[in-house]
Length: 163
Image (cartoon, rainbow, N blue to C red; front, top):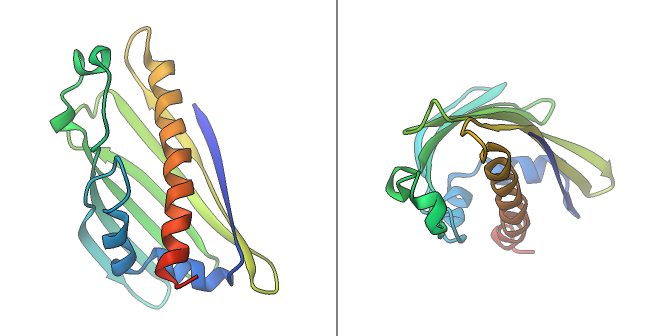
């Protein structure tokens, strides 16, 4: 299932990109619901790119039907990303620690300037859940959770930047 999530900011595009790449912001993300504390596994930087690997853990509630199929303790994954600094573009891929045969997800983030001190961050990608009969419903639930998280993440980023 394809998705598109848009976040608008009354901030310059580079400031938003720099904030998303700030390890201190990643720590702040650990306070958001349902995500657990992100663990920065790798952060390689040069003048042109930032390559990161971050482990996440789902910390929300799952209904009993999902728990019958999925162990909540095993809902961990690594997000591998590469950010091209010059064009404010990040590609990412999810690598599940468990259930790798059931979940595939990848996409990108693009930050574009909208004029003086304003920008838009757009996430596009795809989530595929390979579970007979309920895969589509799980994909919808994941995307809904991503949209909810993006709204909270935007608020956290503004707080992180003192706005």
